Image 1 (cartoon, rainbow, N blue to C red):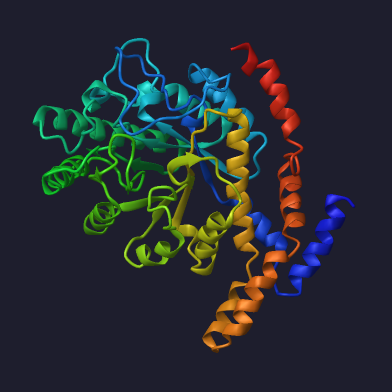
Image 2: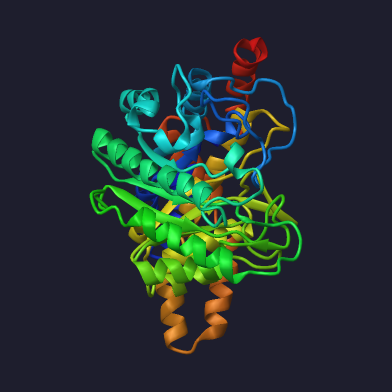
Length: 418
C-alpha cells in the first residue's frame, strides 16, 4: 500500500472523531524547532583562544569519527541533517562557536564574531537563536561564573552577558525575526556547600546587571533563564535551581526555559507547563532525553515527549511555547543523532495535534471520566504512522527510515574523510 493510500484511510478514521489531519500536518510542519549547533562537534566550539578548559558542567561522551572541526564543517553537517528533517527549522548557536582570525575574549564579542553564521542562515532561509557560554573558559575553572565571589571574575561574565544580548539583537535584525536567547550557567558545588544564600544573591544581582541594559530591544532579543538539577562538578548544589529560575523569571518578567533532563529522575515537565503559563507570557523548552541523570541523550518518540506536546495542545499554547533541542551524543553518527532526535520532536508535535482534545475536555466537563479515559486509550492505537509518513512526503523528505542511506552516503563521502 502506498503512503497516499494509507493516509486516505487514516484521514477518514481521524475524521470520524472530527479531526482534520490535513490541518494538523500543516500546523506541525509550520511549528519551528531550533536545532542546536553543538551536536555537530560535541560541544567543543570554534572560538580562537588560548588553551581553555573543557569542563564547566558540559561533557559529550564517545569518539565516533567525523566530528566537525570548524564552522564550515558544522554548518555543512547541520544542512545535511536539515535536508532529512521535515518542517520549519531554526538553528541555535552558542557563543563559543564564534569564528575570528584572532582571539576575542567573551566579554569583548560582538556580532562580527558570528557573521559567518548570520550569512549562512540568511542564505538557507533559517533563523538563528543564541546562548551565552559560561563554561570551557579559564574564568570558569572553579565552576562559578555569574555567582562568583571574586568581583572581577563576576564582572567579566556580566560583560559577556551584555555582549551576547547585543549579538542576539543583531541576529534578529539580520533575519527579520526575534532571536531567542537561553541563559544557563554551570555554577555550583561538587560537595555540600556551607553557603547557598550568597551565590544565589550574587547570581540574581549579576542577571539584574545584564538585563539592565535598556538599549537592547527585548522584542528582538528575547531572554529565557534555564535551571538545572545538577551537573558534572555541581552534583551537590546548583545555584540556578528550578526554584531560583522560576522565581527570577516571574519576578523580572523574563522567560523560563525548562530542559526535559534538568529535573529529578522521576520528575517530568509536562505538568509544569500549565502552571508556568499562568504567570509567564512564553516559555522555552529544551527537548532532551535523560537516562538516569541529565545525560542529554538523543530525543526519542516516547511517552515523556508525547505528554509534553499533548499538554501544549490541550492548553492551546502553541504560540506561547518555543521549542528547541538540547542533546549531544558523540558515540553515534552525529547526522543520525540530529535526524532521529528532530524527527522525533516533530512527530511528537503531530501526535499532539491529532489529539481529540475538544471531546476529551467535554467528557471531563460533563463528569464522564470513564469515557475520557477510554478515548485517551483508543487514540494510542490510531493510524498515526500513516499521517506521519504523509507529513514526510509532503515535506519532501524520506519516509520512515529511508533517510539512513543518505546518512551513510554522507558518512562515506564526507565524515570519513575528516
